[in-house]
Structure formats: C-alpha cells, structure tokens
Length: 84
Image (cartoon, rainbow, N blue to C red):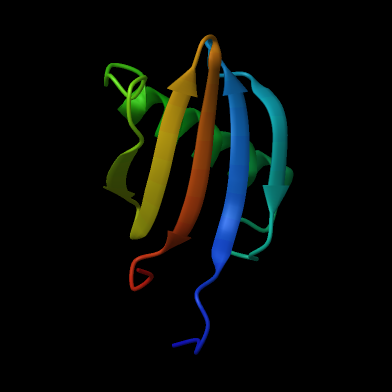
C-alpha cells in the first residue's frame, strides 16, 4: 500500500466512447490495447448514468472511478480500490 493517494489514469472520452485524451500514471494497463479496452469498458458501464449535475463514483475492476459528463465529453479519474 502506498503512503500517498495516487491517480492511476485520467480519461477524456467523447459521447461515443472514443478517446479524446488520456494519461496513464500506472502500469496496470501495460499496452495500448489494454488501455483502450479499459476506456471502452468503463464508458460502457457508465454511459447510461446521469452524471451531468454532479460527479459519480463507481467501483470498476478493483478501481475507484470518479466521473462526470459535461456536454458531449466524459471525464474519468481512476484510483486504486483503497484510495480515499
């Protein structure tokens, strides 16, 4: 366990789930294909929610994902399951 909270990645996806921008700070997704599949999977899980007025939090693949939708962009921040 790390002593300091950490962000594993930040994702910015469009309304169709295509990656606009992404930054990975963790080696949990070592290849580009693993990163793309994680982005598509988290988008598929969250696209039906209403995260427009406030940010939402979800557990996904042993990660905490905080996300918010602003117009046609979907913002995701991922941290470890033990992060606060």
